[in-house]
Image (cartoon, rainbow, N blue to C red; front, side):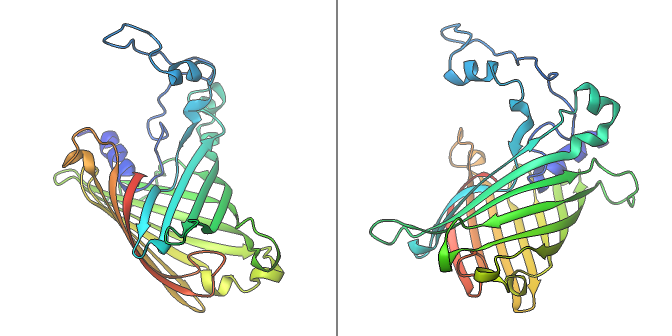
Length: 297
């Protein structure tokens, strides 16, 4: 397998970093509508409404998955959780500016929303939701790396997080971060490994609601992902803080590869033992087991 193809497989496997054409630089130029194949049965060129919608969205190819997106049932159901996440690249890598200066293609806007849903209560209320917009820069694969490393990337940015509540339950914070990402791949066995430490600097707390959040969230965490693109992928997130450590494990497996031939979803198992999993109850250690499906892992 060519080295470029190997690297693309690894990055797709290991991290939700390249759900679009970031690694290949492929795609139609800005302003050019993508072609659509006719329906094989009716020969209708626009068989679905989305086909027509995309004709008026020349920048749509800049939107791609970012963090994991999933829906998980808790045990008990009061611990249920779901998350949605996407990113938007500001400069298309095939446009003239990025072709002349490839580094500008690394500027992104990201958005992640995480909700904790009490499905055990009568009215099924959301217990807490974190809204996390961010601006970040992600480098291309850097040339200065050891021979055993297939990919070396740097990502840095600023993220805001708040729960949208008011009064005594209001929580919000901002932090700067820097995260180097190391990717390894074994082409014989198809096994990939990614290690992504993250260094954070917190600032501008909600002084009345969570002035001591840094003591529970900390300034360092690391994500380790290992697995195969067409099989089981395990993600482990470990964080340290003055008040203690936090741990989250996520196991995902593509259902389309086994029980449901045409399903495009993943079976997702999550175990959490962490401080500040939610902003509202950030001083409490929470342990939870969840099972459900993921759309992006």
